[in-house]
Image 1 (cartoon, rainbow, N blue to C red):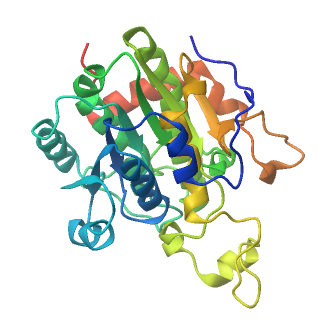
Image 2 (cartoon, rainbow, N blue to C red):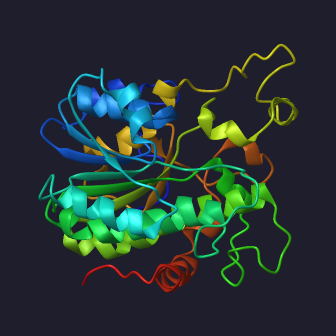
Amino acid sequence: MTSTQAPIGSPFGYRSTAREVAAAGKVAGKTVVVTGGYSGIGTETVRALAGEGARVIVGARRTGQAHEVLDGFEGDITILELDLSDSASIDSFAQALAGETDHIDILINNAAIMASPLARDARGYEAQFATNHLGHFQLTARLWPLILAAAPGARVVTLSSIGHRLQGLDLDDPNFERRDYDKWLAYGQAKSANALFALQLDKLGEPKGVRAFAVHPGGIATPLQRHLTMDEQRAMGWYDEEGNVHEAFKSTEEGASTSVWCATSPLLEGMGGVYCEDCDIAKPADPENPRAGGVWPHVRDEGLSEALWRKSEEMTGVSFPG
């Protein structure tokens, strides 16, 4: 049963770091898969979990860069090639992963692109929706037998964003073929889809001992902003005129903490299907203060999550085993 969308009184919060959270969880000996675990908060997610004794397998589009970043880290880390915009690459990654392990305790769907110019994958699908949502949908389906092998107790964590407030989800035109492309509307669509995916996945997984969570990591200065000019970021208040990042932004270590909390916290045992931020289950958003965080009603809509699931199966040609 989907858990109540309300804070539960976590001992961690806005400025907690991923390593602090991981140290309080039981991660030693667990097998964890992290997509995009060599850039931004993905790097700190891997550092924290591997440093506390987990075996971490990283899916990386640029494996050479991943080795440059991760090879000096403490712990057991394996890097495998994965391009979430390429369905064949996803299947190859899943096959390679099955040769590395017979189970997955934790899957963290972390990789993403944001506010990119209009681009399409080989199928003609809009890139942000294809990479951020459809790629992780197909990946999770391909890894589902390995996740079930770790049940009960396995978890899937999918990164959403405060950007889900932009909504934009149009299941009749997810690829902007009949509406003008807007990079932020497309991002809002993809991040809404990430949260809705976690909601529906938890309904599928709970009877089998697998729980799913959606995460807003917070505002963090990372390579995710690569498609934005500094002028755009100043206009949004992220940087001042001297190039200093806003004081409310988190460090990458802090930004990775909620992913790690959802993946490891004993407080979440028996819970799932919720949207989390600042190392706790989020409260409902305030429409009068939309930048203050919280979860918007459309990503808690079970009818919409079911419709998105059917659309995702149709677009990828992939269904979850069983």
